Amino acid sequence: MSETAAQTLNDDGLPEPAVAPAWEPTGGLPALRITNVKAIPTAPDNIRLVVVKVETSEPGLYGLGCATFTQRPLAVVTAIEEYLKPFLIGRDPNDIEDIWQSAYVSSYWRSGPVLNNALSGVDMALWDIKGKRAGMPVYQLLGGKCRRAADVYVHAGGRDPQEVEENARRFLEQGYRFIRCQVAVPGYSTYGSQIRPKAAAPTFAQPLGLSQEPWEPTPYCRLVPKLFEHIRTALGDEVELLHDIHERIPPIAAIGLAKELEQYRLFFLEDPFAPEDNGYFPILRQQTAIPIAMGELYVNQAEYVPLIRDRLIDFIRVHLSDIGGLSPARKLAAFCEFFGVRTAWHGPGDVSPVGHAANLHLDLACYNFGIQEWTTFSERAREVFPGTPEARAGAIWSNDRPGLGVDIDEGLAAKYPFPAHPLNGAWPPVRRRDGTVVRP
Image 1 (cartoon, rainbow, N blue to C red):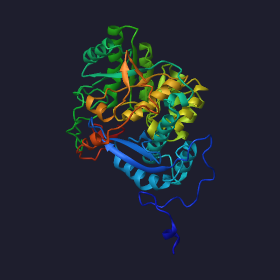
Image 2 (image 1 turned 180 degrees about the vertical axis):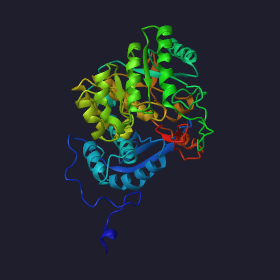
Image 3 (image 1 turned 90 degrees about the horizontal axis):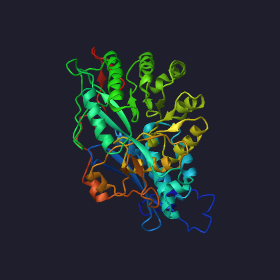
């Protein structure tokens, strides 16, 4: 009989691990094994989300994690089901750190967003399982609460400064104190300024020719200081204002813009440079004291550790699933604390409710919490994900259920498949007037 034929198959028809674990569970807990790992793609708000479900040998015990990379979701699904699943079947879900480290190096090449998101889905699910077994919310496993709730910021966009002001005032009336302001540049395609009905299907024009709305940095750099002059005058000093450059302009232009915006006392200025331009941060720090948030596009610790170590940023903005999940994020938060850097995890609509719950548990447990980006989920999304965190009085609150506190209705999730898209989820190119592609 061949070696393969002699192996024991599990319930999914997959071979059991060839090598038994070198240790057994301790502390009186019963033996526990991972029996299944599956990706659940869904889009209740027309945004492509990927959630991982890790099932165990204990009936009814499973965990959920976020693996959302909305521009490449199907690649993440393949990584989960074709590579991580056979690697993890039979493992003890208690061994979170060992599972993370061994899976991280199992591909040899590592730190890319596809594999990191796949690993994040598993990692968050294992923390969810551990919290459920302990009968505690995950923040208790991370050391307990440092605060009652996590302050959030929301997005006010508009076609002109007056419309941005109107939308900001609506948020202020709802109890929000931190507001990111973005304004459209007339005649140009501008990041973050679109006003669409809630849960409307996004439109994606692909600007292949010069007839489409282009992007140019100079008109944007002229308009943004006028926006904040208007907003600060209209809303006063009590509101905290934020702005996202979104890596779109040349580094030297970003430095000039940061200097101009300093007088308007922003809570932070986000993503002044692309990760490829990290070398400009020392120059920026010498020119202005405006608080800087960075990290949304980072996937590798070599990108963000030097900026934190050298005190070149004030807020770390990583997308938890893009760096590999809750395990690396809690270490990153602790590292930031030693250097006076506060947390501001990425939290738009392309983070699933499970991912937002993971953000919240870290927010509650980290002493150096700064602010949390927030999005409003539709009632449809909340039905798919019961337990989704809720915002009250400008903050999000834990429901204090064991684990991450969020579940998924798989039947409902299946009713909201990924919407049709000409680029299968990818962002269309953004181009300058002469047709040159620029960063999105």
